[in-house]
Length: 510
Image (cartoon, rainbow, N blue to C red):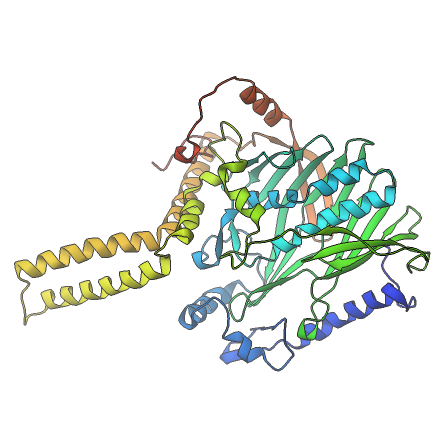
């Protein structure tokens, strides 16, 4: 698909070929057999091939947690772990996959520019810059929550966009999304396939992303590269997406082919993206280059891919300012996604913002006394309680009335603190239990789950990593939102007090 050929050994073509050949070297500096564990692969993105053992003891895990979690996860090596829910809260961020889908809308003005653009090649420059812009957010190493079946996320008050996403399938996990403003419509069916490799995870995007530019009816189709999450357990976790991104103009046959360079020794090539806009005859017209964590630029080129004389490299997109030292590496836009600032009037009760586990994690992170501190205090109380109980049960001593009072008080306090520190996990477990109970009831009734805002089509889309069932926006959310907005009600609801309710039959576990 317009890949650079090795015999075109000059200019940007040569640089891309050199970067791709470096991929093997980056992988060769990983280490196996580390600390006695077979299959462990540790890669320091900023170092060479001799510092893997030093890198392995870094990261967010304490040694005892790291060792026990490695032993638990070994049995899943080679498996697709997309649906796993038995994951420690330490790796989660207070956001769901439905919200993460909305992050692609941060730089939606680039699609507005693509729609307004007369030049068909510059149209693809802006559209591909939009597709690349989300990778800064995707480098976060925290896992979003898997949505509950029927869960939704709504967003307004950004770029005149109306955005809706919904979890349309639970096994396998699939989401569908739709966004629209006066310039474009955006439709996505999202499905991930993963392969757990021990200390890394390969993520394959089976989804379908389609953008329609309204002025000329141009339809764009996006195929992103796969992603590799490195150092999941041993070392500092980091993300790389080496490979090819293709954005095709299905209306004209033009396309963009971009190459995400793999991270080489001492970080060489990391973040770099290079490629071309091709016409329908697969002739290069515009070169595109930059870093997905900084900016992207473009320049007209000749048939050999070299810059045209008298032209200069111009910037198409640059990342906006981001908060410093943010706990979850959130952008300002990610914080807006989580807030009720972007929530519409009469927010659906199935919205991700209202999830009790997500909300608990968000508030726990903002609390002055964090979960780690509470857990430590709690363990002290538990130890004291255990000692008192041991004394009471021994034949050499009897518990006095004062001892009994102290024991009861310490028991209550430790239980309360333990409940606080494990609150996110408990809430997540309750949601999963309710989801299983509802599935059991649905099957007993002979019913099938039907999404509210998206319909399953007959289209089966082939991808490089498997076939995809495609969901289509049915327009009902537009009707729902129009009815709510035209209701004329001036009453301001306290949406924060709304109980999370994605259930088809109500809360069947209560």
